[in-house]
Length: 156
Image 1 (tube, rainbow, N blue to C red):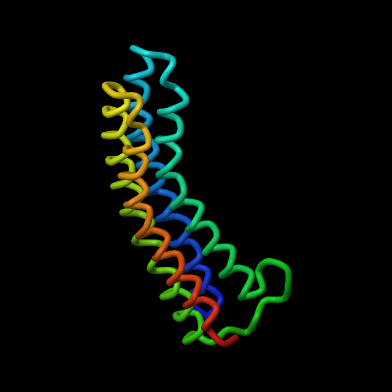
Image 2 (cartoon, rainbow, N blue to C red):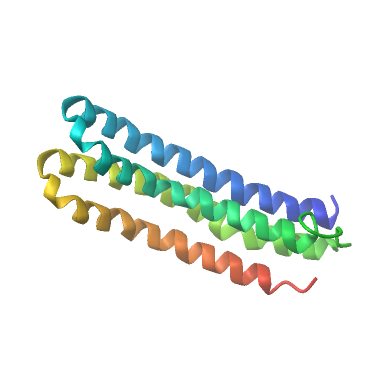
């Protein structure tokens, strides 16, 4: 593999793994939310908000993938003649958001599903359920920042 292929593997992992995590997390919450909404359709808006939360990690992975593609010239420019070492640098820069995005989205989905249970019994406590879920999000944001800082630190 050459440098471009290795860099694109990094982009694919960031997008793919974070996206898989988001799909799983959103699905977990959706199952809980659908159960509640069958009993109380008025809670759709509250549960939809909780369901959206684990989807952000997929967005972070997509952003990281776009940055890699832009930096190597796939988007908006000419392909750079990347060395294998540079390719591996891009690949490694994608690892924080790829792994943390995958795992945090799944766990955020679990926390958000529990928050759906909280809303079922005490709808006025939605804010507390959101805070619990957002605490998990913190680590995805930190991983995104680490990936971005690493990506812009790679000399090309």
